Image 1: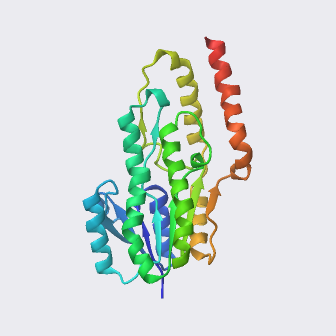
Image 2: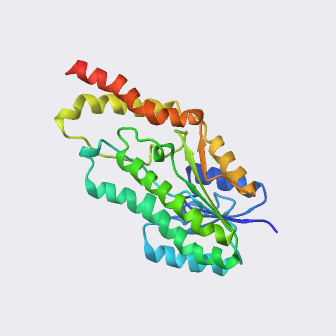
Image 3: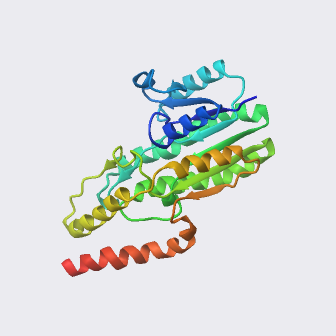
Length: 267
């Protein structure tokens, strides 16, 4: 019997690529989108309406989902967005929105599906986190914080769900060429003390996105996790991931050495 796989945020980016890949491999793929009617006839898999920020949407989606399927084998939490901007210059309400989607939205969808997974006594939850859930670069304070929260939540949840044969993993990509940069929210800076620094860090962020890898590696990593009987919890993806422990100490030095040095010179 082929597995049924649910992918949130499947109308673009990693989610769309993954959904197409798994559908072509013969899995029963169900994707979600806030506006599925926009993609009618454009995708080969089933696409259902879901807004992970809306409790009523999550409730009605869950009812609709299990009126159409008998069991769910894999949940891929992929929906989310990115806030960029220096911490002090980013309004707190924007930070709350970041957490409402990336953290609370992911948690609420997962919790809505857990009773069905527990009843089945099996299942798999794969959540797309980020390398910034392990390190904290500048200009991404709220995005990084939301991904750190996701990491912490699922680190604990995996122990609680092990008794029900429910496997839990997170995938931590570095920068990849998707539309996340175009769909991000950028806080407008207005504190003069940060003017030089902001210019430098924005240029570095832009350069990182322009030089990002093709996203195939992320899709392949998630596909392998689905095929694995005992999947690992943490799965960094990208050319730099072999250096993560080094990066955790190197990132502060990198930004202090390159950006901060030029800022001090300019001042």
